[in-house]
Length: 286
Ligand code: AMP
Ligand code: ZN
Ligand code: FE
Ligand code: FE
Image (cartoon, rainbow, N blue to C red; front, side):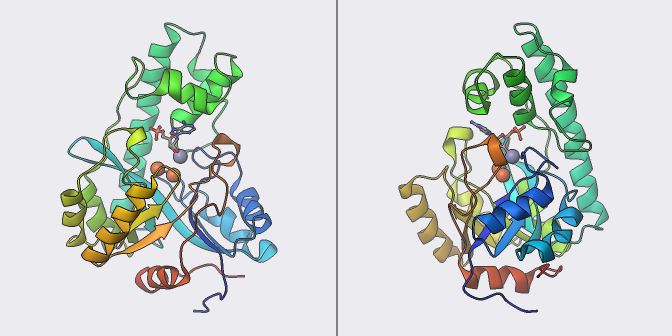
């Protein structure tokens, strides 16, 4: 396939198919506005936005890597695994996504029930914040809390009400990280652990745990991400070199839902080329 030259590449973004605030098409236009030449759409536990984003490639001139950010856990620690260019028809992977979306839905209802004991908040308030078929997450509860006037924005909702250390938090079941890395490979995808040192989100996995993923097919580590300190980044860069896996940089853009701006971190061309070579789907190019 043609590899685009002289490019700016952002490999982690969200749309309304999960907890972003742009439609997939709007996201592609925002990427063009931001001067990006390649983006990956990586909504949580879904491939739902792929077709709409792909349809916007020619009108925006932005190439599209089809991806998913998969919710997993390693010994009870929540880990987000990015998968790029996997076969959307893989039954086992599709079932993993469906199961996670179901568990997320039940979990969000439980959280709303708990919150509803202290704040005026109903499940229908949350439903109104999510688009049809979207993967439900805490950001939708945050938006409902904002709409109800309990907090000013998502950031405040997370800090004061939705935090894992608070009384309203409910965990949800997710598949084992190691098994999911192997599953992504068997579905032709390229597995990359997302914001693996983002300790403000909760407990993070050890270096040993990351190392053990390599034999199961881990391809890369997301290093340049706003939730990583400079020390985290330096450490992970050295560590990735030791392990023989590549490193990526990405924005984790969520539209107006988070301060993250498209292209605030980017991935080098040669890493992008490795992902393209290892994935089973093509990149959708203009
Ligand atoms: P969940 O997957 O339902 O546990 O919610 C996690 C999602 O919330 C991820 O997509 C995060 O990007 C998002 N998130 C975490 N902290 C914040 C925050 N402070 N403000 C806005 N979004 C956040
Ligand atoms: Zn998200
Ligand atoms: Fe994530
Ligand atoms: Fe994300």
